[in-house]
Image: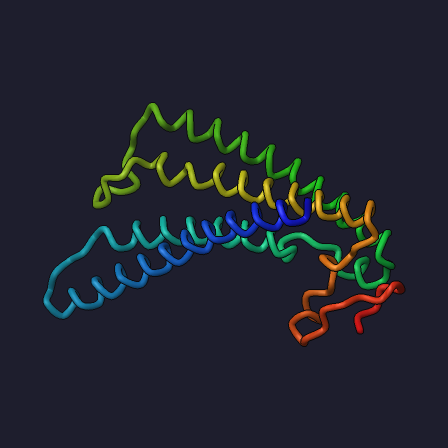
Length: 188
C-alpha cells in the first residue's frame, strides 16, 4: 500500500512541479519581454495581468507541493513532543481536517468558477483570456491539496497498523542526514 501511495504522490508532485516551473518560466519570459521592449518605446500591456495570473498558478502548485511534503499545515510543537503512535494519530487527524477543508474550498471554488463562466469576462483588456480560466486554478489547487492530505492520512493509518513510522521523520532532521527514528521517537 505504501508503494501505491508513494507512487500516486510522486506523480501528482511531478505534475505540480511542472506546472510551477512553467508558470515561473512564463513569468520570467514575460518580464524579460517587458524590460526589453521598454527602451524601444513599445508598450506591452499584457505582461502585468499575465504575470499576476501565473503567480496565482504557481502559488496553488506550491501549496499542493507543501501539502505533499507535510509542510503546509502542521502542529510542529506537538509533533516534537509526541512519540510515534500519538504523533501519527495527530498527523492523521490534521490531514483529515485539511482534506475536509480543502474539499469544501474546492467545491466553493467550483461554484464560483461556474457562476463566472456565463459572463466570459477577460482577465484584462490586454489579455483576452476568459477570467474563469484563471479562477479554475482555485478549485483545482484545492483538489490537489485535498488529495495530498488524504494520501498523508492513509500513510499515517498504515503506520498505526504496521508500526512503520519512517514517513514521520522530522523534516529538519532529514535535511541534516537523519533518516531513521528509534522506537522512542527521537531522531538518531
